[in-house]
Length: 108
Image 1: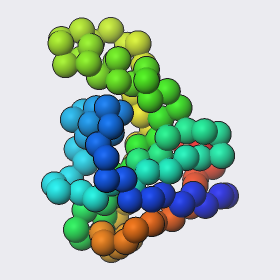
Image 2: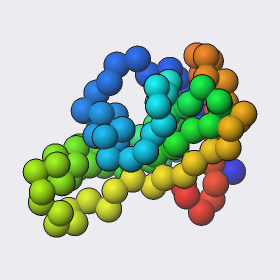
Image 3: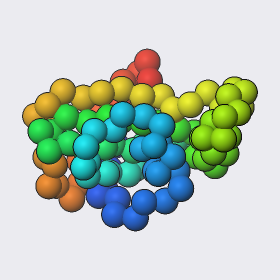
Image 4: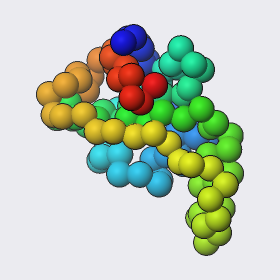
């Protein structure tokens, strides 16, 4: 198992916006960004109660195209979507500048 440090992500780029639009990322989340040892983009949308929606994607540009196509009603599978999981309340500090995620072998 490895640990990934995610940093508060204050700029909403196209990939972050697409994931937030397509998945239930909670209301008013603080967003944290980092990268796995395999150069996957890791986003954590942390809610005020310390719970989180975590998304892992190895093809952010492809996901943006896929998301835009879905938005226009084209649902052909051109991207598998993100690997996702939810984290229980109280796990993370909503106000932190960084958080750490311990990777799960079945996900990474």
